[in-house]
Length: 341
Image 1 (cartoon, rainbow, N blue to C red):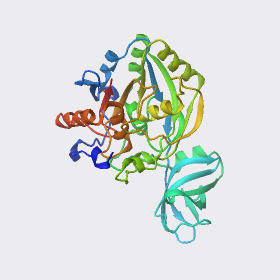
Image 2: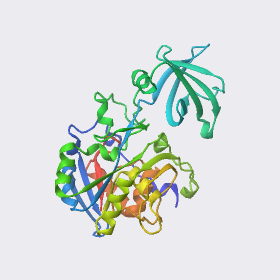
Image 3: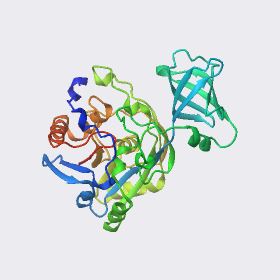
Image 4: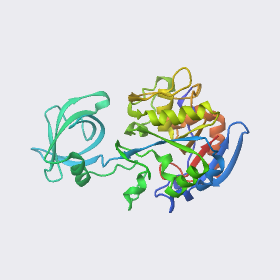
């Protein structure tokens, strides 16, 4: 398929700059693949569509303050690091801006010197492997000098940093939030549990590749970024039990989809695993485990709109997006949600 098949025009004023006043009061577009129907709801109505025994799969990753503003030792030149992936204890893969001249051996300081870094080598796409030097606990220092890296299309200041975290975030490691989960509240989870819906937790650390545009005109030639994931025995048991009982596995977000479809075997069962996944899901993909999907509205020509198009059909997704734009839904990370049944 061609890249242009996933383009749509979005009025700029529909790009959400701030989260909804209350998480579960964002709007919800419900699309039914079998009925080819579209409904308009609010997010807290989602419990109407879930049944006892269904398994909701959430990504419990937590966004770290991965953006670091500093200076180059010797010249004082300004530099920006964005932490992408931890390689080992104090060694990370990072994006640098500006970074073209930053060669192995170059050193940088952050937070008036409480954090220092040295470039070890240059890797794919111009990223760098760097080693950090500090006294104390790295995570505590990062909290002091780092900044939460909001997506580039959000220009407004975020007053409450927790609004770019899901209420169930717990495992540090993401450079971006798994935004489909931002709509859930503790009260809504309690309602779902009382109804008999099971909740399984997986972890996938979201990288900035999420925002990287697809540049190949033939989408099959796109090189997908790798992201670290973990799925444990408890989650696998809940997911497999739902399938065995004829109930649905409902993924919260494309990140949960990628974990599930990476770890499912030929018998339709998920197995405990951890590692990197670079699975690229686009139309023609045969889903093996996911029965329904909760997601946000995604950027044109992104790998995420390709994934949801694979799940619901490109034409139907484009029809749903057209309806959402006509009804002035809010788009992207702080925007409204879609439930695909």
